[in-house]
Length: 199
Image (tube, rainbow, N blue to C red; front, side, top):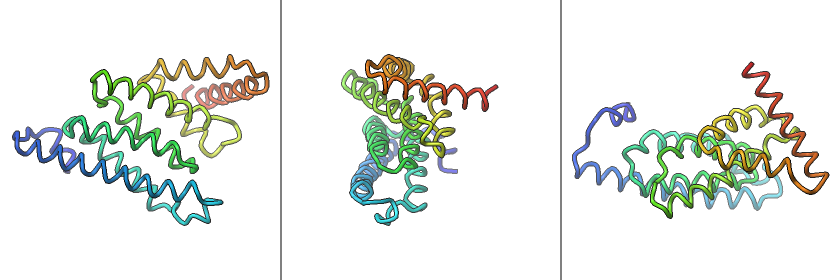
């Protein structure tokens, strides 16, 4: 209801400023929470040992990105940039489910990324990190994430084509024979999944 109204309602200048400030504060708090939670996750010996990889935090991460992307057209540059930073924090997680949430958040928010020169350079750097992680999730040894990663890769190719194409090309041209063979298996896996799900 809230997101629907925001899409059709013109806010007054004062309300718009208050809304931007509130969303910036939420995005900042979300970033701080991610730093704490992901620090605990990555320092744990195993997902079970951390006690922080339950469904509730995962649902919160997805909901937070849904909110940030849903109001991005009115949230202001600061909130949008903080939201983009949050997606990159997620892909650094040791939990592939959080990585998937981070990639999904990125593809939802990248159309609203600030367009100043500094911010655009930062967005390109973030995009490179995101596509690299997504490519790794397409490895056949990660079957649980392969389909989701393939779907996200298709979107990344549309929204950040230079980074997606570059990541795939660099991987397939790796000078290390063993790595190149592994990347070729990843590419074949992507091709197979796309062929099966998008005939």
